[in-house]
Amino acid sequence: MLRTINFMGVRNVAFAVTMLLTALALFSWFHKGLNFGLDFTGGTLIELTYERPANLEQVREELVKSGFHDAVVQSFGATTDLLVRMPGDDPMLGNRVAEALQKVGGDNPAVVKRVEFVGPQVGEELRDQGGLGMLLALGGILIYLAFRFQWKFAVGAIISLIHDVVVTMGILSFFQITFDLTVLAAVLAIIGYSLNDTIVVFDRVRENFRVLRKASLIENINISTTQTLLRTVATSVSTLLAIAALLFFGGDNLWGFSIALFVGVMAGTYSSIYIANVVLIWLNLNSEDLIPPAKTDGVDERP
Image 1 (tube, one colour):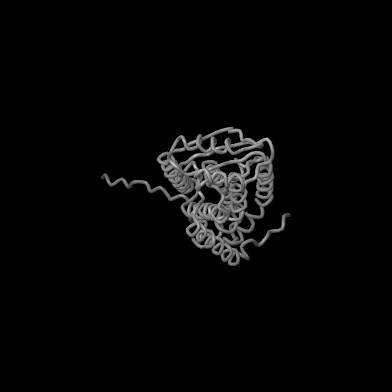
Image 2 (cartoon, rainbow, N blue to C red):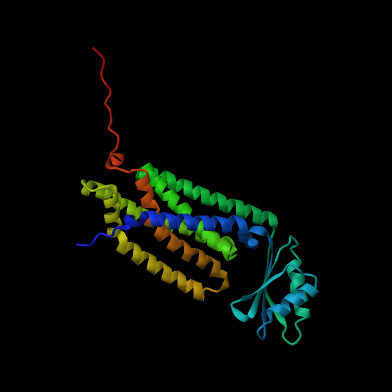
């Protein structure tokens, strides 16, 4: 028989850790802000390739001399590939930057691979729609869980999901990782992953209320979490291995996406045990909450 692990025995310590991480994430989020990519802010992106490894500092100096002071230059995969990002609402800005770099390339000329422009109005609409999509997803989950289980389960799941999103966004903010549409997709994927993990535990808790009639709520949660632990660990580890492959071999385009998913999966696994379950204890879930209301038959008052 599987030995029951006393997960809830350290719930107060876990709560302190949760509050600390959440506070640090919120501080970073509001103090440093998110490093929105061109998808949300609008601007120009130019991808360049050189015959030999390019000198980033030299490229930055060349752009400043040409009058482009707000350019962000970074390596893109190989040392011969560069990515130049610039804010602005001029659709022809990218072509002018590319021409300037090609003229001063000397014996190591630059070849333009792509130029992309996103207008500021489009970026603002994408940002608003992305935030609205996240709120709608959380609202839909709340309604689904309230009908599928019970409102106390729904509250636990939503608080758990909010924690996962806040911690992930806090990490992205602290390290100033570019937040673009791919990272937004990762955050939405985190919501789905964490919810799935939480529902597995909740489903077992609900089943054990019928099986373990004499067990307390804390005992029920410890037993249920232990029974689902192998599944949780196997799913999390296999998912993290796949994300790690994207992290190391996916290139710069998938870097932010991979980091967000990696952090979110770890936060989701933790929150399924030490946030969602703890909320059930706070709300004093009991077997009576899971009993459907009795149907009262109408009284026939006719003589």
